[in-house]
Length: 233
Ligand code: CA
Image 1: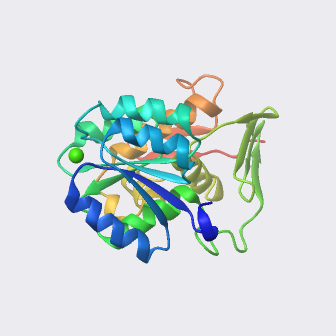
Image 2: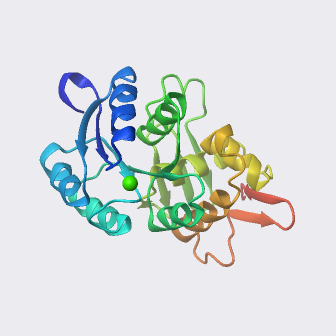
């Protein structure tokens, strides 16, 4: 947490229009904020300020954004939300493949920004009320409250978005969801058109929870329909 118990956001963005917007939006959302206009400065601030979340523009003047992202992962534990223009689908898929925790298409509004930040920080108030504590099936354990996943008793590290996807499927076990439905449920209605998010994340979750990601036993595909998490035994 940043000073005064407010979460601290590090914004790595060179476009002053977005810097101005984010300065105002983050203040409304009660985030502390640190700004960096280059990748190099951003990496410096990531070490110096230990932010709770990083907003990373995918088009920076001095460094490839994915190289900044890789170095951010070494520099701090904060989840990273990639930002870029909506038409830049390649950049988005690349960023998600590289392991960023979430994606914010530009231009965005205050609600979209705060939804992404809450999602990656998983501190949405009241989100866990009344939910069953865990899902367990054939060695796979998803602990909703502790936000922990293990396979055969061994902990598995998931990114925030990977965990949200798995948690949603676990809470709705044995139900098939179309990719577009999954995206809407996990990322929000403004992402409903981005069906490839589901495919990218299903693949990543499988690689972490399945013994053989190509022959999944837990997170299975119903051809022509979608995905479901199967409760076994
Ligand atoms: Ca830029």
